[in-house]
Image (cartoon, one colour):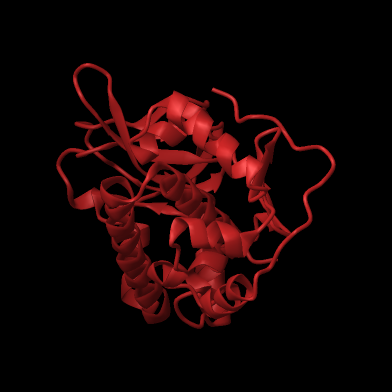
Length: 263
């Protein structure tokens, strides 16, 4: 079975058997484990490696002196955390573990070897970086212009599709190990507002969250609330998802309405 990195990069270009072998070797670089809620690397640190997420969820964030934090992206398996960090003297943001995290530490030489000898992978990596910038722009729009219900619905749509891309969904369900504080820091809301808004989405029978797992009950309805278009993710699967969403794909809600997401 292809690993998450292979799945992710295959979204951007066709990969040869040699490309797949090289990516398997990249995923087999020395690994590091980080406990949940601990920093993988901090703002101001000198970066030595590029991190490939193998297991768990992480987040990129900036913080103020008084402890206030803005999450600017989540990192899931298959994500390479900022390909350009190795050219920086100091990190301009921090990367933290949302859950227990396992990462491969990729050194500069391994990356340069790929860039020199694997044009398909190089193209895919460039596409991934461009997609990351596109996601950053969408997050700015989300925090700056969308209302609370739209922000959270949009985040749920995006994370589901990103997880689906790397094979980490089942039907319309996926893990969602985020606390209300995490969602608040990612959407510019308060935890209380997040709690109230998720309750509204549940009452509208759009989503169910139970045991840190998200089930989208009405994908078309959630997309409509969020004003969500998957085009900014630049995924090959966009056409299929767009057709399903426009067609009103709906999952009947289970008997158990679920429980509120934990803080």
